[in-house]
Length: 151
View 1 (spheres, helix red, strand yellow):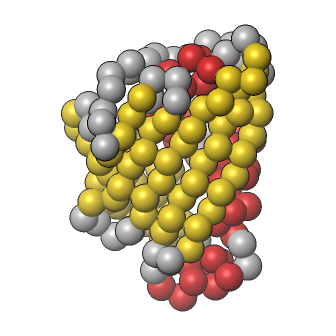
View 2 (cartoon, helix red, strand yellow):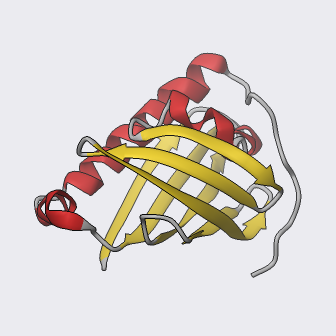
């Protein structure tokens, strides 16, 4: 099992950063390996990703969600086994620290070699930079879901 932890500070209020992170279908706009995400219901979505030229599909279940604090998920079924959590920390009224932790099981030769050289960590870091640019340029979220999901 590989683990990735990356953090970035974004110049938007915590509510704006959190609300954007609940808009899963917008992820392809800032997550480079995500082809599409389809929201099935409040706690389930279907992901299509392309990693190292290999397309994968899996469903994810939101296992815990608390507004302005955290979103946690697990993959269920599909080609990729992983779990993750993103947390939001208010630094000021206009700045938020976003931390992503992903635990994943590399599949196949390309992913195993990639995890050894830190490719996954580099991809997450780049995606967080893309998220920062996306949300700061917009200045507002594209939508929100403020529901609570208890672990």
